[in-house]
Length: 173
Length: 108
Image (cartoon, rainbow over all chains, first blue to last red; front, side, top):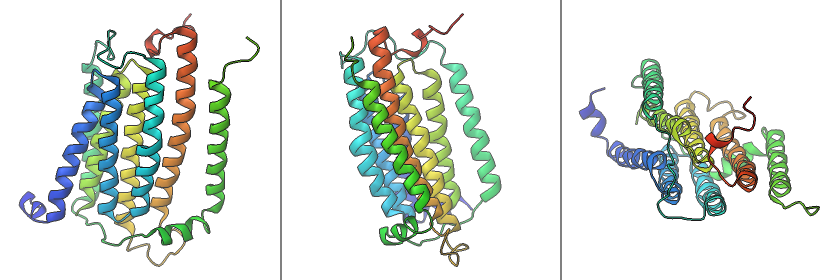
């Protein structure tokens, strides 16, 4: 498929804008010298992923990302940053290693390999336009996937208790 | 919309996450990069769901498997962040530093 054909679809222009915003935000997450800015840039990247899910017709997953990630996980990260590093401005210690080029080389090689493999495999195949409502997803989640669902809820409970046990100060000391 | 555009975007996000994990010193920032990689995986799962929607439409059971897996990944990532940050806070209390290259107690 030629690029002019691809860009003539209005949805692809929206995809391009969202994708570029996501990639720019992701690069800021891994390169920002300020810890809080990195966490806030992750919000932009995750909001972009929610928009991508809406474009693909997965609305329940999109709103779950907004609620769980942007609502809860980022707040948890900001708490972690506040506890482990009091100065929220520019840090005196370096946040990156000195040797960035080997890591950049590995990441670039990984990107080239993955995107080459997917392009070779999928080419110009189109995605369907169907939409999955929360109704559809709930029906299948509590029917076919009810045991994994309960297992995940148990994992969350274990993580909750584990987090409390780990972070609590020992009363003996 | 072709399926490959979503896969390439996810590959790009995943590679940026790998770079972040390799290059960051602060443990909280490493966890942030891991979240970036998990987001890329979720985009892949939902893109494959949208791609396989029509061929799997007659299978009521596995029709929404991609989205269900994405939800499970989100839930497990939330648990991982909770435990991970608790461990980082503990390390910070013990060593008064959250830099992972200074944690060399296990080195011989």
